[in-house]
Length: 406
Image 1: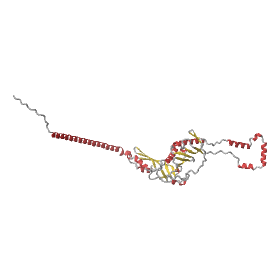
Image 2: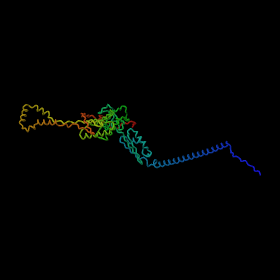
Image 3: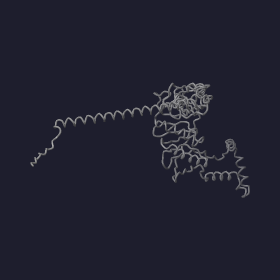
Image 4: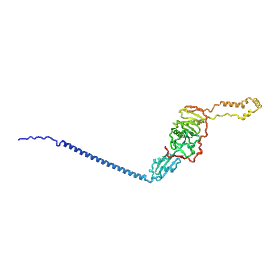
């Protein structure tokens, strides 16, 4: 029996290299299309989610608006019924309400309070405004008008009498005001001297530091010293200090800084004057220590003198009268000679010469330091008030500009 030996076949690739490359390319294209479809599906679902979310938010907002309109903005219970206006000046209620652009019957929630306050602040007479909403139907408007606190006069103006047409009023914030007439309450206002106002106009603020210091002094003096210190004029021409003259014609020098501290020092000095019955003449509060102070000198007491008529009659007596008087005096006893008129007059003059000077200035002590300045004769000026009474007007109105820069 013959057995045939079979030849074993070798393993061979089923495809060529070119076919294998093409097969891999087909697989890549299939995976890319699948990924693109998946991305498109994700984007679609994301857009659908956003649209749904926007629809839900819109529905909530629409519903909330309908609810708010039903409960508040369209509710007749919140209609404006009362407009309360308070003002400390001459502005009328009609002017304030018309400027605020509000009326009764309007819904109280539809009124924009900051916008109303801004409209009221545009009025030149208004310094501060406040608007409040009181439920269910009340609006309160509070107006604080500008109040003049001093006059601003040119440097070469006579403080005794000046023409108010050349001067300006100024409020506590430094805004210049032009009066239409000279009202009586404006006469007692202090004068700020030394400011150049040739290029100034009503409604403009004064930005000088010395003017701000003078206004601060006026405000602080009324709070700290009240009626004990009444300012008549403030000279700011030196710029580094304030030369103040009060109603008693005393001259007081202030620095432009630390006004309240200097006023407290002046209060201590005034207490000293009240206690010792003295009157200030000059004070320099700029000194940190050893404050220079002078007082008004007191009148010295005069010794009683014989009348001129008695002296003339005594000298006109003849020799007979003189000799008779000498004889009478010689005839008097010794104990009566001591009480004779001539001896009493001599003793009185001797006591007057030996009497110590009671008008010597008492030193003012502050912090252990003593200042002994020489007394200066004070000249009183009776013409210290403003001599413009003939120009008094019937009202105290002020000519306001169209706009005021605050």
